[in-house]
Image 1 (cartoon, rainbow, N blue to C red):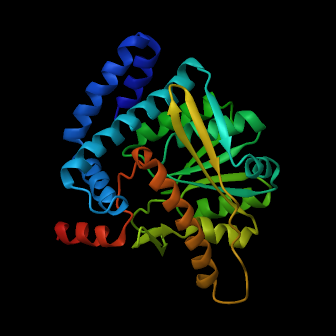
Image 2: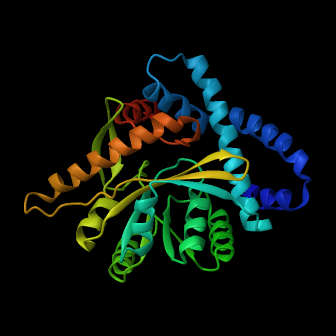
Image 3: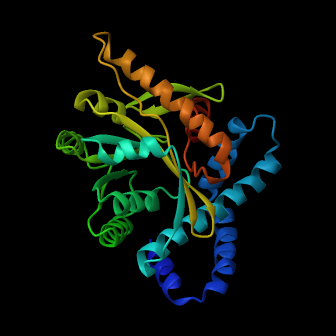
Length: 297
C-alpha cells in the first residue's frame, strides 16, 4: 500500500485550495471501492441510530469517510509540514492527572484523530507514549507509519502492533511498571484477541480484555481519552474520569467486567455525540459479527 506515501507527497506539494477537492474525489473512490469499510459503518450506524433507514445511513457513511479523509490529511500535515493545531480540553483536571501519572493506560477508540492526539499530548507534557495499534494491511505501510509518527514526535510516541504476540504484553507491563504511559484502542477486536462482552446501545459488544488485564496487574488507572475534530486544524481533547480495575479477591473476570461496563458507558456517550467521527471499519456489535460470520460460511 503506497497511498500513505502519496498522501504525504500531496500534503507537501499540492496547493492548499486544491486539497479539499482531492480529498472529496478520493473519498468518493473509497466509498465505492472500499466496500467492507462502508458496510461496517452502515451496519454500526444501524445500532447507534436505531430506526434510521439504510439509505440515510449510506449518506452518513459517506460523511464519516469525508471526516476520516480530513483527519488523516491533517495528521500528515502535522508530520510533513510541522503545521500548528489549536485545541481545547474537556476534562482538563483528568488530563493534568494523566500528565503526572506514574504509569497509566490511555484507552481511546477509532474516533477523531487519535494519532494526532498522542503526538500533541507527548509534545505538550513532554511525556513518552507507547501506542498500540491494530495491524496495518501490509508491512510497508506499518513501517512507513511507525517511522513517520516516531520521527515527527521526536521519539515521544512509539508504535507497537497488536500482532506482535505475547512478548508485547510483557513489554507493555514493564513499561507501565517503569511509570510510562501506554495508549490502546478499545473499540475493536481482531481475530485471536481475548475479549469481554459489554453492553452499548442496548446491544452486546465485544471489547478487548487486554487493557483491563494490564491495568489490573500493573495497578495503574485507565484514562478514557478522545480527540475530535472541531474545524480546520482545530480539535477538542475529551478526557474522562479514570477507570480503576479492582482486585477485590473475587474472580478476575468479574472485576474486569465491571471496568468494561464503565468503559462501554463512556464509549457509548462519546459515539452518540460524535458518530460522524467514529471510524468503525470493523464489527463491534456481537449480533453484527455473528451475521458477518454466517454470510462468510
